Image (tube, rainbow, N blue to C red; front, side, top):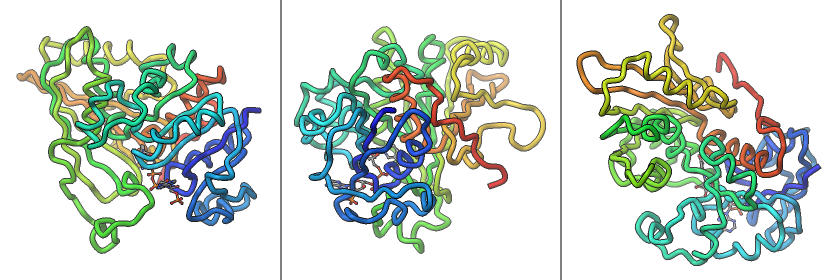
Length: 345
Ligand SMILES: NC(=O)c1ccc[n+]([C@@H]2O[C@H](COP(=O)([O-])OP(=O)(O)OC[C@H]3O[C@@H](n4cnc5c(N)ncnc54)[C@H](OP(=O)(O)O)[C@@H]3O)[C@@H](O)[C@H]2O)c1
């Protein structure tokens, strides 16, 4: 059994990591940290885990060595401590943004700080198995992924990889758990409930991950995103308006997506004519590691609409991180990730 520990286990992503790793057939959870709640049972923060573990949270000072360390701290909190964490574990999956971008110059631009450990950036593989499976097999260090970046990256990868798309404009609707467990005036129930709030019409930081991951043969993607907060706890739904440079039929698009994703255990192409779940919806993905992708070709124009959905805490964070660990450690890729979600919910 691999011994895994979680740093930042009191948070939403840390809680999901704990839920997944406690049920993982090849993993034993060794320690889980919180500074504010050290000494408390983990189920005090994550009541769904009541009766499933006796684990008590510990402070970072008490953290010992383990085989795999998952780090789920806010961005900017991991890079300054990376040597400390690397001394404790042979493998690290960091869910923050601190090691997602390869170019140190991207950190002042998108995050507003100079990277304190730029020499570590090339040691991290961007932890999305669908894109970097081979590199992850050899990696000791993997980054996590941005949730909004992932719902878009997975939707657009088949198009940008083959160079059949020019400009793309994406609207992403997101749930409140994207903001983490720390309350703010904006997350107060009276302010957050029932909103349809433009959160980032331009300039969302996850654009940096799109520009990085969707560049092929030096072709930088012409992509623009807007993010809107909606009445959801979990989930992200991306609607991408893709302007094609080749006149692809619906059948061509089907083939492209099928060829790209047919062997992927967590990507489902969702496009049916009947019923009301005809396109991807985040609601039925809560707790699952799936990213569902659908599309519709507009007749008489060059527009292809691609729709994708995932659970931001799962495929957008903890699920992808566990998937990356499975690949890095030579375990079956779907181990611990087979929960299909709930219906109705
Ligand atoms: N939420 C999402 O949908 C999502 C998706 C993808 C990636 N992520 C990334 O995952 C990471 C965690 O996100 P989250 O949503 O779980 O956030 P969160 O709910 O706010 O949890 C943050 C965790 O970090 C700890 N922490 C905060 N400041 C700390 C500090 N200065 N030193 C040590 N520990 C500290 C907190 O523990 P204490 O109990 O000690 O305060 C808590 O356990 C972030 O980097 C985020 O960008 C989040």
